[in-house]
Amino acid sequence: MARSRISVSTIMPVFNEEQTVGNVIVRLKKVLYQMNLEHEIIVVDDYSTDRSAQIASQQGVEVYVLNTHKGKGCALRVGFSKAKGEIIATIDSDGSHRPEELPRLLNPVIKGQADFVIGSRLLNQRPLQGRALNDGGVRIFNDLISLFTGVAVSDSQSGYRAFNSIILKNLNLTSIEYEIESEMLVKTAKKNFRIIEVPVSFEQRTYGKSRLDPLIDGAKIFFSILASYIRG
Image (cartoon, rainbow, N blue to C red; front, side, top):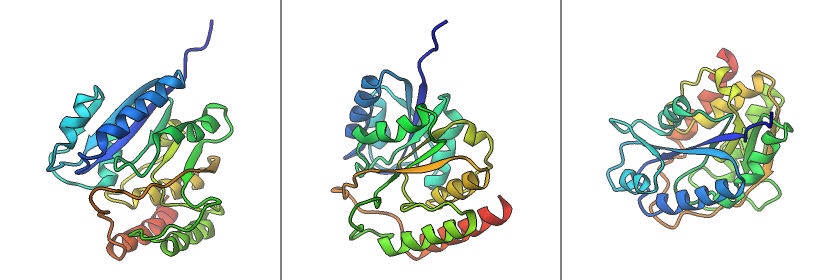
């Protein structure tokens, strides 16, 4: 009997991204169809005050709207709980991640070469400029994660990822906001899953502004790394 196609669930957290979310979904659907994968796109709207949820719904994807604004971590965890795919991908809705590069992340997992793939904005590329959480901050978190887990990465805070769904069954995720990226990475590394990076482009958002506070969110990320290492 021929093996059925690989199934992929792509999770997209959204908060007030009406200018970009529709375009990202259209491009994402095209890429997934071209890869001939069984797929679902799950949009989790974090109680947007604009038309983000309506625009996403018009594209014929699954949309879940939180009943209050909770944070990226909560939105992703809701998406993970709904996902049915063998492989899970996450992508931001602000247009900074190029859907056309998703195959770079998916293929190592599909081919059994890795369990967890990070799309690195820093791998073999120039430092990020003008980011709320700048290149220096990212490198500090990278070094801390490497110290605790022995896994060296160049972009621990990237939200562009693909991983085997079995990983979620082995993690107890609790993050509420941006620290979820660090929590997932540390806990995945501690479980000895194979983690690699692939280079991806980064396109500075042209609408709105980043909601990440370099001091407050930076502190949350720092303590999340510590807690994930200690408690696992």
